Image 1 (tube, rainbow, N blue to C red):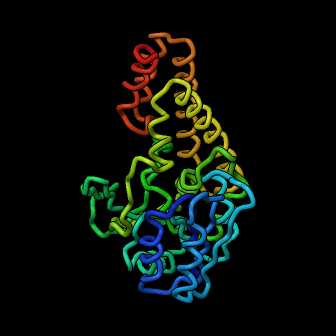
Image 2: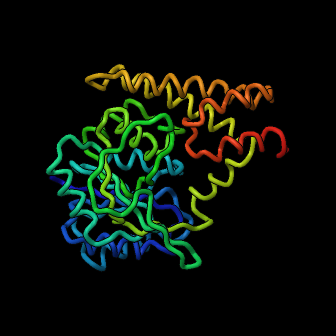
Length: 307
């Protein structure tokens, strides 16, 4: 199978070489490394090209967007532009364990029922602390079950290995507001083809300047939460269409989860708009839909305390 790694870059000078080193030193050869730069204003492009030239890396290339697309579109379109049978999304600032690609490729080769494979990560912080998640490290292959809180994406896209068939199908369902990992994770969930290996195959950098960290901070406002609810409602509609058109077998569980989330999001939206205590209390019935349980209390805080 042809292996592609897609690296999305934007002003990534500080950590890019570490990430590229970890790709170059994988225990099996990566057939294609596509570095998609989203109009960096620093010397990221020059650095990446110099790295390729220095090590004479066949199959590695840098593509610079004609205009800034934003990280969502940049990642998605770069993945579509790759030519591998297996595609690994890659951030610009992490460090992959040198056997990550070999382990995940072997699992995908031996398990054709898997369309998307995730793994544990070792999250490391600026103060030197580390934390392994999201599953206990047991070195097992597990199937990720569909539950009411399907909107929770437990692992970041940099831990994924995606089969080409699922990636091609994502073209039909992607919208500009959808992060690549959120869409692919949920496509796998609703088709019962999402699995994980409980081994930390990546060191995932947590730093305050990342796009992920910035958006997490921004969500702590009423306007951002309303926007999140709108995107979640859109995902509910997208997943319903996906289940109807492209998922085979018994679909009762999928439709039950979608119906539960549809009711939850409608009441949650009403709570933010009307600020009714009754609606807030009704949300307790949908405790299981919250990506994180503390977000239920967060709703009360945003509606009644934070102005």
